[in-house]
Length: 355
Image (cartoon, rainbow, N blue to C red):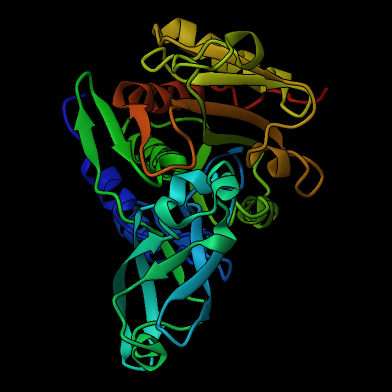
């Protein structure tokens, strides 16, 4: 793949952390106009193709939220103090540029800023040895005092790191928010290709669900509402070809090795087997990833929604997760789309997933 797909590029540029997904959801829903588009009060979106009462339904589910920050206090000097939305390594925040989605008294809009902390030169010797903590950082938006800052932002406003997408050699894409705009893009593209191709024996619903990073909430409510017969969660997993990562502990998932099929206690063994069969039949490179208790993805909530949903997991290898330089192979993204599309096209509507 030589360039960033247009809809993926649009998705990863929008600042939309957990609980504040609306801007990204609007981009996704606009791109989903090829099917029947739905939305809910939590911020999740769906697009349906070929869904009917007399046929099974397959839901392809990726979460559209990203990790971010929220403004917790504005001090007298106009500095913004903040907390995390989702899981951060605080070291990744030092010296970063940010975009605050401001709602100050002067009107809303994107407010640029930088994350600052006391310079190392001014730290006490013992403090220099300690890792930076979020409570010791602030956001500087250039305001001269609190009153000016409050015309731009308000307590509770969300923020994300400012990082434009970057294409590296070998089809590798660098950006914030790849976890997990990638999954929502795959769900969108699978539904689009199913709708545009030969008719299949099942209905398909592509889903871009909210609030995964803070509790798998959107997949729980969307899984309950849709009640599909099968669900495929699409997320990212750690690429294990970067320095310092143990393949013995984390599996062998290099960039460019294809999508990763999950196998584990909370995943349907039949769905995992059919994903493997589809990959082998279509000549799609893939690897396996095993889990013993939970996957840490939307698959965990989908598989216990309502009376239970036969759930599989397809992941995309990603370097530097939860940072502003998340890195993925676009070939692996395309492989995930092809794999799930092949799974759906090969699926027997009479297949039993009882175990």
